[in-house]
Image (tube, rainbow, N blue to C red; front, side, top):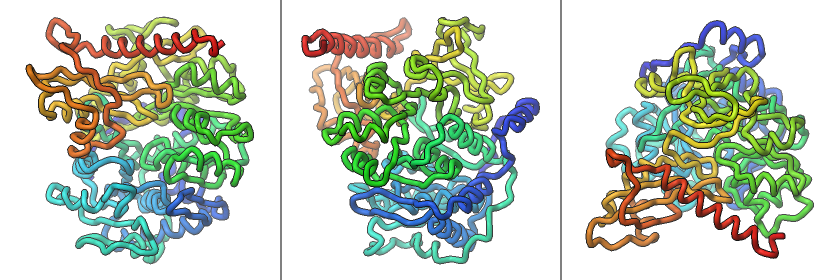
Length: 559
């Protein structure tokens, strides 16, 4: 792994985190291994129409250790970077747990990322090995990987999990079957590692067209698991996780949190609301929370019934904006809402406990959590008072150690170890934070970050498009979606939505990033230097959404 320029935590802060029990001085592998042993008899179940799985955590733990032993036999060891791109299958749990015990630096990749994203991540992280599926749905991972091969000279080992374990397809040269690794001698136990060393690199899209590699240490990652457990009330029934385990929400809520809390692990291969609601009743599961979409999709599904509400008594929402209308609707149904705020860089900044005031939990994004400090500064770097917007700065035990790009690390951290989030918020007199805007130009669709610059770059390659501005549009279901404003070249024909989608698919851009609205304009609002005023476009879309909602509210049936 390349040498990383990571920040060092102030010794006084580090001592405080340890005193508060948020830093355990364990490696991720040791932390996980103890949780896995303690919960070995509990169930691990994957809810899937095509690839269902039901067994014990102990069985998957054994598979994880054998897979790790197979990697060790092939020269992969502590500190080596290993990526995995798998759907919510049992092999994804085995890969994550096994790599952690091996002491490898994990690079989880969301399963729906296309070849463009995957290629960048593998090259930039310097991954020595990749664990991937052969296919999933319409995606052919091996075909995509073959196309990337010439540019991935540091990738030495490709491990393949078949979509159909009963009838695996022939493997291309240079690939090894996951089952072959899992038949190896077990790893004897977790590797002894410096807990302040890198444990995981998570890639997130921000203001640039290329993703940023966010480096978490063993200390920051385990602190996040502890922090999440402190927010969630005691609940004997396990939750059903539908977010992909390649994403922070799915990884923390599906593969780490349940083990620490002493619960079974339940994963949904795909988020299909009727199947999720049926699983709640069949196995007595509860809603795990996540982005707003996960809740609204269940409430909107025709199969939703009053009996489902006992499995949805609480909803921790974060990862994307939470419209007030959603919180109001949930509370009318008796669902206790708790909004939270964080990012890949600092996963848990603010939140609340469910016994705190309901209006604060549902109407704000929470207060700073245990060990976390937050301050708001104006453009000149001076603190702002209650009720005044300012950029949010944070520090705490779960804060990342830096980016894979040292120049980004230098820009992100201010003196004292404060992280510049790039988000704008308002703090009330009681210390509760509400996010109001973002400096960064990203769209958060259902909890997934979309880089406007990345989409714009591809739209500009479309014939006839002279200029493209992609911004966040309000979305009652997903929080936000991408809206593309296009200025055409003189005499050019406006592309249809179908043509835009076909173009982006051909460029290898993940479907979730495609614009869901197109606006063709004569020109775009600009500053004196001709920079596009994207906030004007965002304000326009917000005003339109508010007008539509007001029109709906004024109808007789609404009252």
